[in-house]
Length: 377
Image (spheres, rainbow, N blue to C red):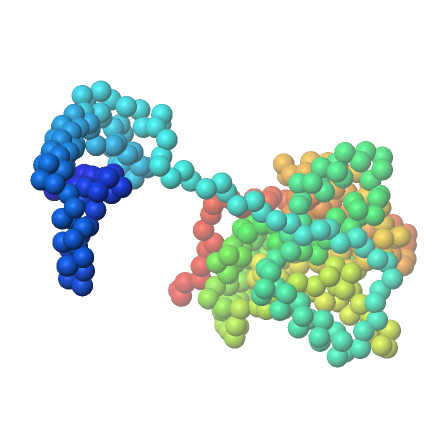
């Protein structure tokens, strides 16, 4: 109440400033002058001033008794409902918070880089500077992700016009940069090289935590296992029981490099692949399924050598199918349209004999699971 009283007195002072009532406050340097100013007013005016002040104070006190304090409801109130003074329940969902949550920040995307068939030629010094600039760009801007939904929808709706420069550039980009488009994955795959007996792989990876597990089996036995966490790779030979530990000195360097600079020529005319580190930390299931950049540079870098043949559903995922010829060898691939993960590849010789293949048998992407860790036995 004291604060309210002071407020009313100040208002009275301001309101009657121009009428000569309460016009001066005490100032030691102006005492004489003040006396002369206030001396102009009669006792009648002084009495009127006192009456006005008392009236204002009385009105203020009356309003304080009749007006409730303003009611503020915030999202920090823990109860399920809030009550008015008469105890009538109020549904909190119907009351606007005083500070509504801000709208979620919209993600920004990089533009898809259209492919150029002609490979650039660089000296080794220029290649080194290229990777240095790519590292700086990543540190400043992070991963350069494109709008996958946009380009995937445009490809699916292309129908018979699949083989546009944009569609093929999109598929190439996704295979080169698949690790940008998911965080966790687990599954199974088969792999065979030179038509040998196939191997069976089970894999788990969490790139955000830097953890992975992979096992390799033959038709009737476990061959090896590998665990990765805390920058340490542990490999176990199931046949001999030998265990090896390999420490990685630091987290792999990330970089952002133009898709058109991922396969270049040095001044001797030799091809040089500038690949990103495989953050899946897996073996065969990493480079032949989850991060298939090497298949992209080997088979897709010349856009005249391959075509998009269609789309289909594989393992409950929307995939794009490719086919082409490189030298005397032909191939076909199945690529997850939304992550760039390779779901299958078949390689053939000139006589169409199958020389190798990789095929995902099961796949789970960005589901909740815990990567198994190595424990001393």
